[in-house]
View 1: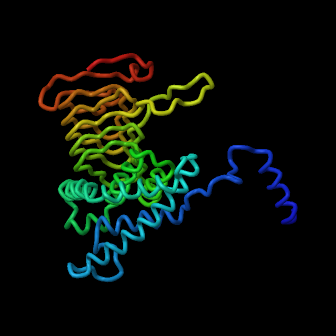
View 2: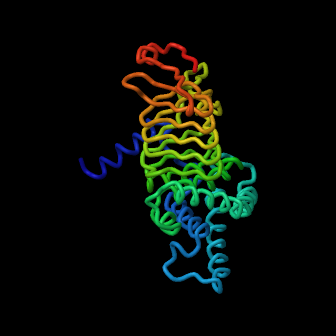
View 3: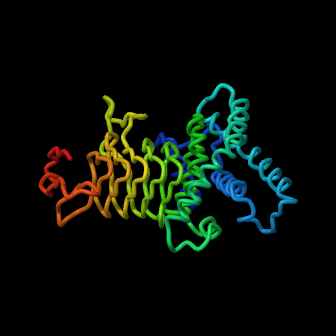
Length: 311
C-alpha cells in the first residue's frame, strides 16, 4: 500500500472511530513537558543530588529560584491545558491559582518526604547512607512524585496528576494512583510491581515489599454497565503494618489493623484485626494474633466457594 493510500485509510478511520480521536479539541498536556516537570520537582525536593554542578549554601538561593521559575512556567502552561480540556470557565486564571497553591505546599510535602527517606534508611539493613537511598532507591522517586500529584489531585487538577505518577511508574515499576492517601514514614522495598489504587488509605510507618497489590475487589456499575466513579473500592492499611512480597489485598471495606503483618503471596478479601499475622499454611490462610497461640483458619474451600469467614 502506498503512503497516500495509507493516509487516506487513516483519515477514513478518524471519521469512523469516535472516542480515540482528539481533533479540534483543546491542546492536551505534553508528555515531554510533564516528564521534565517531574525531573525539575525532584531537583527542588533534593537539592544537590541530581545537579550537573555543585550546589553550595552560597548559591542554593539562586539555584532554587531558577528551578522554581521554570517549574512555575511549566505548571501554569500544562495545568491551563488540562483545565481547557475539562472546560474550566477561566483556565488561565485558575491555572495560576493552582500553580501558586501547589508551589506553596512544596515545603510541607518535602517535610513528609524526609520521613519516607528515613523510613527507607532504617527499614533496609543494606542501606549504607541516606545519600544512597535518595540516589538509588526507586521508592524515593515514586513516593515523592505521588505526594506532589496527590496535592494536585485534591485541588481537582485533571490529567496532570495521573501523568506525573505514570512517569514514576515507568521509571520504577510501581503504580501508585495520585488519589491514594499515604501517611508519613512510608517505605516500599524494591518497588517493582507494586499497585496502590485510588481510594487506598495508608497510615503511618507502613512498609510494603515488591509485587504488593492494594486493589479493588469489584466495581459498582451504573444502569449502562459502566463503573461508578468515586466509590471507595480499595483497602485501608493502618499504622505500623508490614506487607510482604506479592500479597494481594482487595476491597473498599477491607482493613488491615495496626501493627499487623501480612505474609508473602497472601490473598486477603476481608479485614484483619490489629496485632495480627496473616500467612499461608499449605492451602489454608492462617490469621493469628502476633503474641497468642489462638488462630483462625480459612480453608482453601472457603476461598474457592466465597464463603464468609470471621476472624
